[in-house]
Image (cartoon, rainbow, N blue to C red; front, side):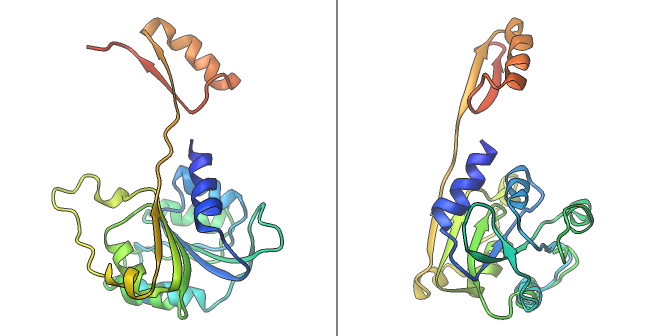
Length: 216
């Protein structure tokens, strides 16, 4: 399911073109690691950035060139953000990304984005929401694209962050499309759990494997 989400969200909805600038949030999540494995070059941790706009534009000035998986002859510039310090180390030292920033160390997210993306963002893969989305919107180029499959920063908030910059979607003619991928393979009864586990590792299930212990 994570693989389908990454593929559909990036290739089918975003439709990356030659020499486009891409910003991806939550880079060490399961969906985003799959995107990383497809060959993305760079990352930053938005927890370390007070001004996210400046951070993105700063990193983007480096113009790190990446070859993106199955997109033939498409040169895509990729930059990725994530919130956890452990993930920052993973992205830079294990997965080989060139740079990263932590948005928790940034007082002004808008300025942080501008440091990494001094020109614009063509494509934004949204999985975090809240302040990150609000900071990214002013930095997306006219006719840019946003694919949204999550807002994880807002799920447990009693009062979710307001998004103040939605007007940019209108004035810049930005296309923002949400999507969800749900595929479940359900078996019933605790006695079915061992076979379900074996089936999971043998590829019998299609989608997420669940064991329904009881309906009550």
